Image (tube, rainbow, N blue to C red; front, side, top):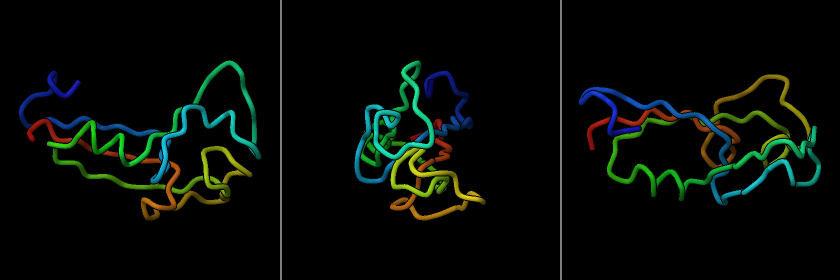
Length: 99
């Protein structure tokens, strides 16, 4: 996807995030608000993002959406909040086309 960008372009990605560990399917974790066998929800860690975009300029925002540690655990917060990477459930990243 980065190769398809113009030289001044940016790729914007957003997705489930957990700072310390990759979770292959967050919907299989305990204490979820909802369960589904129809879909999986991969929750990516800092390690994956660094590996994918090591030589790129990245601007990221981190958001906390749930009461639990992982995606969809315990319940939604009444109001989503921008937070530190260590407390985030969601990453919103803008990746530059140029390294």
